[in-house]
Image (tube, rainbow, N blue to C red; front, top):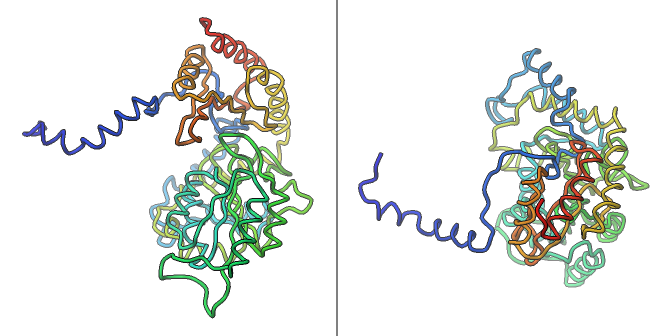
Length: 406
């Protein structure tokens, strides 16, 4: 159809066109690109997404008559036995009292932060938490305070200062809150492994702060699940006393990164699961995840337990990357994520483009995903790449940095 008034059609979307033009001028316009080249960009850390075991698990589920789609929300007819089987198995694997399966880590983080903290509570969060957590904060009834990245003392100071002032947060919605004049609850929200910097949270210190201030921890293990911890349960499982199963701990484990599938698991006390089912709008009003995907995630969890050699191979690749890429300016993090901070948006995208032309899928990351002035290459290590691929990447990166043709 041809719109009869072209000027009117242009006017309808002028603000959006202007915004896209401004992004282009700042080298920040995003576009979708097909998968090409050697994988140094994905979060498929254990190379499970294309593994034979996951393919077979999906095929087996379909052969057993498991439906491809759920057909509705889980509070209607969308609750499938595969969802409940996954949640039971995930809780046993993690060591938590219960688990709840949602369609994505984004939806899960929004549900947690928008639903659980109440009016009169305080959420203290790391300034570099994921965008999904920020969206949950925007919808929350509770007051929120950001503290400098990975600064445990700042968490402690914020909690102590709030308690000293009476432990109450002003504002918020009329609904919810604490009855009978009770003091508000402190919530600590953080990731264990940050996706753009590759660094780890001071987990033991944050646990001690939570204990000191009777706080509840909302812990995002998205990038540590499958890669670290006993049985691939994440960094929370590496502490002397694992955190799962504690009444003050909620752990989010995504299924679309190292587990190679889709969705997210909230591992938490049973009361949290019940509360989210009854009050969590992202859960209540969303079509349930595919039952076939639930069966696939179950197999991914079993692979984490059955094949520790995958984590060992990835750890060896991480060590090799530290030796190979550190001389080129990459930050050695001891994890599968190595940032090479370049500063300027245009330079980051130019170098990423040169590496892609050379056959390496490395992506440039710009604000607002990362702070202003810290545009970077995010080098992600996965078992989709071999040590010789890593060495070839280093050679290509050396040429790109020196301005030589690749």
